Image 1 (cartoon, rainbow, N blue to C red):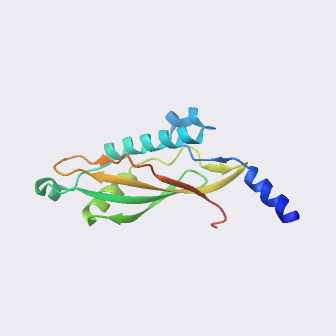
Image 2: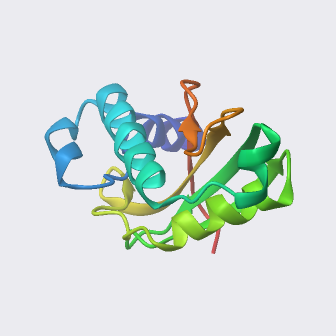
Image 3: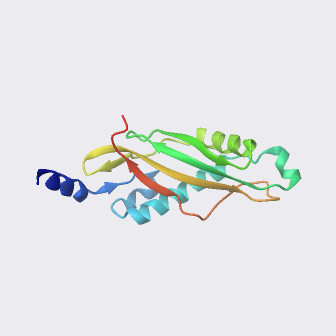
Amino acid sequence: MVFALLASSLHAQVVYPPVYNKACLRYVGDNSRLHKCNQKQIYKDITRNIVYPEGFTHRMNGGRVLVKILIETDGTFSIEIIKSSHHDFSVAVWNAFQKMNPWLLGATIGEKKTQYVFMLPVSFAKGSTTPTTTSASPKYSNITGMR
């Protein structure tokens, strides 16, 4: 019985995802819209910061990189390249993320700060000199008890 009460109290706590920048602050409390705003703002920064690999522009090759982003409780983040069609695309994405600012707010569950992870796909279009971002939705989840 005590376990059932504890479990139900944990499920009742609200998960607030992290907030990427000031443009997304107005969506705190509406997780669906906040996720969309975060994604839009991240893609905007990636597109601004990324450099298309030089050797690929002439070969008309496209590619895709899947990035796992771990956001710490203080808004700092780390990335891991999960999958990539070519090493040069991975390097381009990695370098773009190194130029990005920390997140404005970290995630919380109820009142407790928590780490947060999501997957983000980035696509490089064939024949383009600038990368594009895919319309596929990133996969989000909060992580508790990682430390």
